[in-house]
Image 1 (spheres, rainbow, N blue to C red):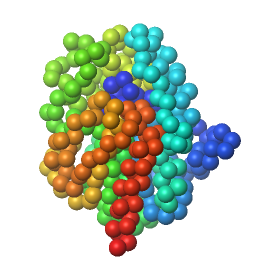
Image 2: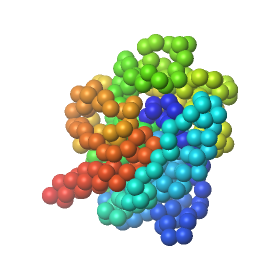
Image 3: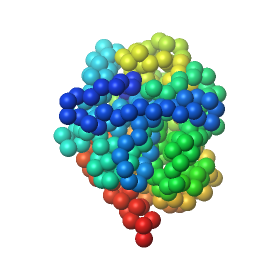
Length: 336
C-alpha cells in the first residue's frame, strides 16, 4: 500500500483500447451507484467462481491487472521525469512474456469470472476531492455495494498495494459472500507504530519526522500532492511526478491518501478475520519483506513469495501461479 507512495507510484487513466490480438483489454466498462451516490466503474468478464481484483494507488483496475503494454508508456514517461528530478531512476520492469497479459487474463484462463472495479478516485469512477469521501472504509463499502449490485453469493478477493487496505477493511466488515482473500504488495507498516525500513540510499530528507511510520510517510506524500510542488531530494514527490505525467488531480490523490491509505489497520479487528488469507509478495519488493506482525495478527493468514518487485510483481508468471493455486484450493474446498 504505502510503497506506491514512496517512489513506485504510477498513474494510468482508463482508456478503451486494445492492440490487435489482446483480448484482455477488450472488456466492457459498466457502472453502478455505490452506497453514498458515487458512480463506480468496473469490468466484468468470464464465467466461473467470481474473483474481485482491487488495484493499488495511482492505477486503475486494468492498469494493475491487465496487459503490461497498457502501462508501459506511462512507466517510461515516469522514469524520464524521475531522472530529471532525482538524477536517476529504477530500471523499467521487463516481466516475462507469459506474465505480460496480466492477472485478470490468467484467472479467466483458470476458469474464473474476474470483476475489476476502478476504486473511487481512480480510472473511470467518480473522483471527489474531499478526504471525507474516502474515510470510514469507503472503498471497502464500495466493494460490498458492488457485490450486492451483482448479486454474488460467493466471491474471492485479491488486493494489491493500496488494494490490500481495501481488502483488509472489507474482511473486517465480514460480508458473508467473501470467502477468501489475497493481500499482495503489503508489509507490516500498515500496523500501528511499525517503523518503515527504508534503504539508506533512498532520498528522504531529515525534515521528515522520525521514526518514519506508514502514517508519517503517507502524510508526507499527501502534503506534497496538495501543495502541488515537487520537493527536490524528497522521494515522497514521486506521487506528484506520477500525477503530472498522467494528468491526475493531485488534490484527489491527497484526499485518497489521507482518507484511505494513511489510517492504520486496527489489530483488534484484524484478529476477527475468519476466512483464509494469503499474504503474497515479490522477493524483490524491498518495502514489503516484513510480514511477521501481519501473520501474527490475522489468525487465518499464511504467506508466500513470488518473483518481482513492486512494479513488476503483478505481471510475473509466478505471481499468477500462486494466486491461481490459492483460489483453486479455496474452490475445491468449497465444492467438497
